[in-house]
Amino acid sequence: MAEEIRKRMFTFENLVNLDGRALQMILREVNNDSLTMALKSASDEMKEKIFANMSSRAADMIRDDLEAMGPVRLSEVEAMQQAIVKIAMKLEEEGKLVLNKIGGDEFV
Image (cartoon, rainbow, N blue to C red; front, side, top):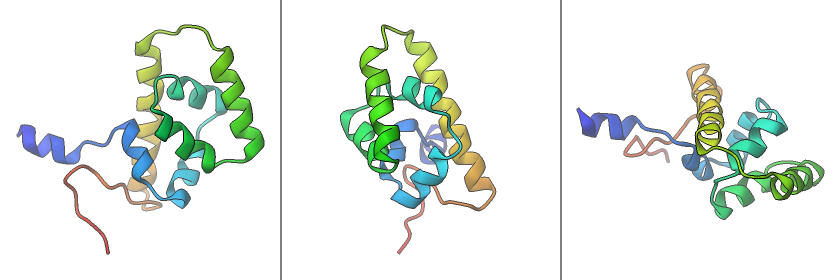
């Protein structure tokens, strides 16, 4: 059962594996304050992937907000990341994008 759960898992950091079009679709559904909070503990690779898929003006604003943001509770950051993952899953359920889950089917 644990293996099955692992196969179906999709986390915030898995967003880095999405193509630009899918990521842009998700980002359109997320407000900048929520995204800034979610990126607080994200890897540099994740931040750059997200910044590359938004306007340079919006990316600069979020970079500035991240630098100015003081300490925040990890639980708040994780809650925001989960909210974004839920948006991605909702878009997948609607058939608007395909999420590559760990151990999931590969597409060619």
